[in-house]
Image (cartoon, rainbow, N blue to C red):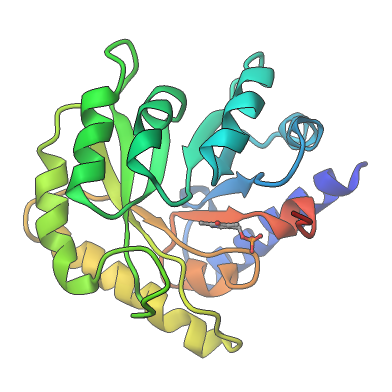
Length: 228
Ligand SMILES: *Cc1c(COP(=O)(O)O)cnc(C)c1O
C-alpha cells in the first residue's frame, strides 16, 4: 500500500471518528483532497485509492493537471483566491468554486459558465477571524451577498467556506466553525437552501466535523508536507 493510500484511510478514519463523537452520519461529510503543489502521479494514486474530489488553489497550476488527468472522473474544486482575469478558466474547468467573496466575481463566473455544463456550484468565503490579511467577506455582509448570488442563472449557491486563523486548542478551533454554521442556518431561515459548510483542514478537521462541516479540505494529511 502506498503512503498516500494509507494517509487517505487515516483521514477517512479521523472523519468517521469525529462524526461518531458528534453523532453525525459520516456519509454526510465529503473529503476534498487538496492537491496543490503535488504531481499528477500523486493525484492518480489518490484516485486509485478511491478519492474523487480534488481541490486546487492556482489556475495556472491546475489547468495542465486537469488536462493531464482528463481520463479520470475527477470532480475539480477551485479553492484559491480569484482574480477577475481567471474567472473564465475557472468557469470552464471546475465543478465547484469555494472562494467567492464578491458579487462581481460571482457574476463573471455565471456569465462565463459554458452552456453545456451544469450550473457551477459555489460557496461564499467568509473571513471569520477578522484578520485584514485574509480574503473572504465579513460576517455582516454575507446574507445580502448570498441572496444576490442565489439569483444568478448559471450558479448553484451551495454554502459557506472559511479558513480560520490558526488556533491550537480544540475549543478555540470550534468557535469560527460554529459561527459559520450559525450564519448558514440564519441565511436558510431567509428562504435559501444552503447545504454545504466547507470547513476544516488537516489540523482542525475534528473541530470542523463537530461543528457540522459537510466538506473538509485536506492537503498535508493526504499528500504530505508541501515544498513550494
Ligand atoms: C492548502 C489549503 C487547504 C489544505 O490545507 P492542509 O493544511 O494542507 O490540509 C485547505 N483549504 C484551502 C483553501 C487551502 O488553500
